[in-house]
Length: 205
Image 1 (cartoon, one colour):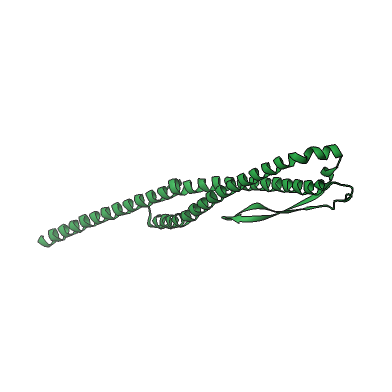
Image 2 (cartoon, rainbow, N blue to C red):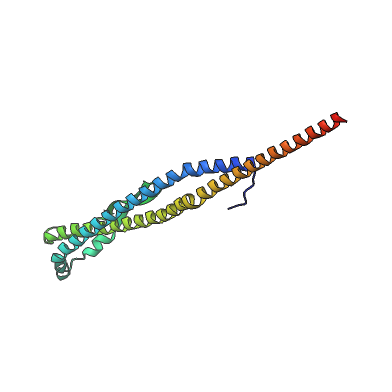
């Protein structure tokens, strides 16, 4: 904290600072609460996506061996893809949001291929989609956690340092000014009494 000047001008400056700090703190506290709530919601969403992905992978195991046995190059049908994502604003912070996946054209003989190939392709696309969604949710959580750390530090700065220091400075300046006023009044009374004594002494001569 910088050295406090014991003056009326400094008293006004410190009071103005206190007003700003006390006005800004609730905004920071609200942001902190919003971030905490959103992180909790995103963690729940992440858990849901992971469970669903585990279920899809478990279901895929039933026909995964068939793909290898019949030599279907299904991996190549999934390589050409474009993931689309947007952003969601939480308390002034943008986090990524999954929007969808576009796949390239898949060409194979519908008559020569068994029916389960279509189902396998769709199932794998769902798994890939869930992987992408999970990845974006994880990135979003990291962004929110970083912002929460910064916001918490700012809340603590204002609550535990800035506001108490400013209040203390105001109190000390007020005491100093009050003491100065009291001393000035005391000196004024002494000076007045001295003048009166000198006046009376002169009148008696």
